Amino acid sequence: MDYRLIAEDISKKAVDFFGDNLEGVLLYGSTLINRKKPNDLDIIVILKERENVADVSFVKEQINSFSMAMDIQIINIRDVDPESFAHDSHGQFF
Image (cartoon, rainbow, N blue to C red; front, side):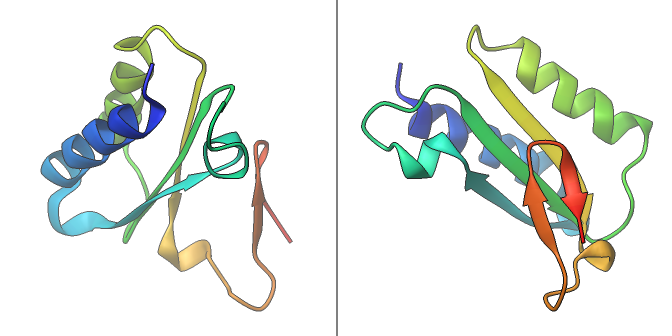
């Protein structure tokens, strides 16, 4: 299973779905750290505005469409402060 191809596919779908509200799509975790043998796919979708129910449904649909361990999270750029922001699998923390 090529995690990077799946990440690219999800990223393209995110661009189409979120449109102008999309700030970026980032890979993190074992997808980057253990590039040759990642054990799951970790993606953060960064939006310009807060997510809504349809946005969360899009994420759930992506997770359910692949038979692999996957963690997709949505955050918005307004909550990201470069002086104090960090991210882990449990969400943002300061």
